[in-house]
Image (cartoon, rainbow, N blue to C red; front, side, top):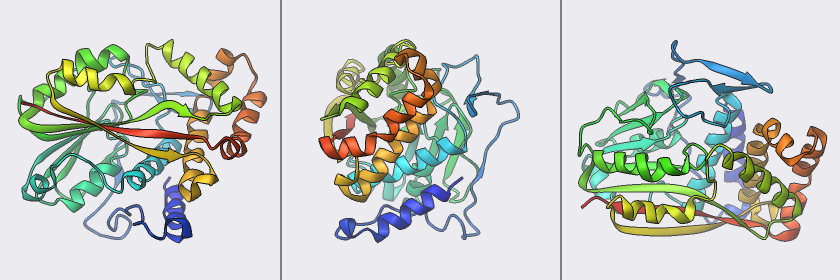
Length: 326
């Protein structure tokens, strides 16, 4: 685990197409600094199941997360972090820099391997960071001292008092939550634990892809159909502002950045389509029956994607949704 991410960072830094922009952040001395360790947590009580050679969370007490939970997925999530960090050139858009510098309480929902937390905790040493996820793929031993992780399900009441956090961050939960969970459980619960005057910031992909070719369209239709069968709406992006308003968040702000798939978008675009292909490889055994094709045909669709996105100039948008608690 991690070799793919290291290679990505080297390639980003060496790319002439990115030379006028700052490189994606490298976690501060994670591999060499004696004050930072990243032993991954593996709870003894945690159970997994294996399908098609991939490991998945197997917990009857929580909504079944539909993507894998293994080293390959951790690498993909870390790559995804750096891609998003590069698109935005920062880790957040809320006006909270001064608060973080002076000391704030921050919650990261769906933290995955904890990459965002590790960066933020290293930069804002006066603030306190908690990352939560349904699977303990985050570091179990960590310094900076101001970051901790807990195995928690955001669709259940969280063990935090009302008005606890100054800033709540959540990212790419579009396949982790059923549509009703967003408006009926998750945002109300996050509203409860956010301090008055605090900020919530939700980051999501818009899966209404711009200029998709026939192969990507076919894959996206199968992807959407599969998740719809699990009551998951992958096209949740346009609904999030309404959910925030309904939960009584104020000053709701929506911002977006364009991003490209494929080498026509430079090194970033190449890594972006690699991330897309890796995601779809992970759900191959789920989508083939829905799409009524065999695995060879499915792999052929994936193999044609890079050429196709360059030909069609395929792109997409990433969104940040920001609100405050009055």
